[in-house]
Length: 227
Image 1: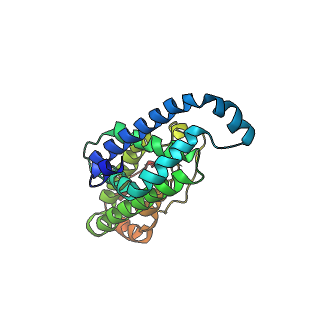
Image 2: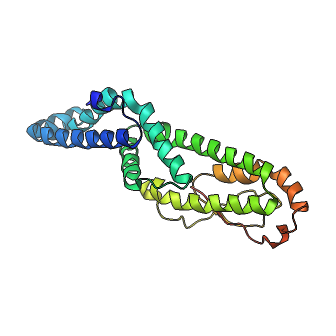
Image 3: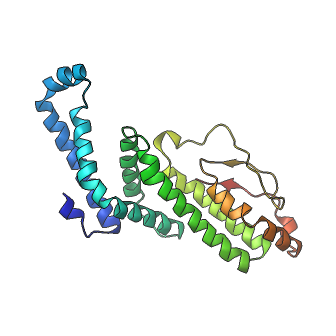
């Protein structure tokens, strides 16, 4: 399995990795039928790990640990391309996320450490770079329009990247601190990183730009939706 993954990058790596993971799971399930007696009695009485769990651990330790850096880099690259307006294979990205979620149900902090934390760092860096460029080149109104567009696109991206149990919009709302140049509004989502990078880091500079922008008074409402 491992030699087929070494040297691959991007979507080619993710497709092959996903195919090998699914094939491995199917093989483990079929082999476990030969040991159904052990599964029903020995494993239960001895409180041992199930055969399927053992098989998954073998894949993680032997295969995933050797290519995990390339896998997460490829995932983050796809997310970056989507943010820049390129078409990506959303189904492939969703299936890779399902791998992280499924392993996260068995291994403590697996989802958070292997996917969520790198994704959040990448998200913060991406929008920090955008905000740093816009604050130097855009007027107040242009900055607000660009930032608000990022918020809306972020909300759409959450349909792919949210965990399965979090795909629905939460019924409660979270009110975040807003800079004074923005009208009161509602923010919902699991991560306030985009909100922070776009609207809070350069709040003082935006206050100064607002005073010199004749279109600033026309911006009545700013919508916040991030993932």
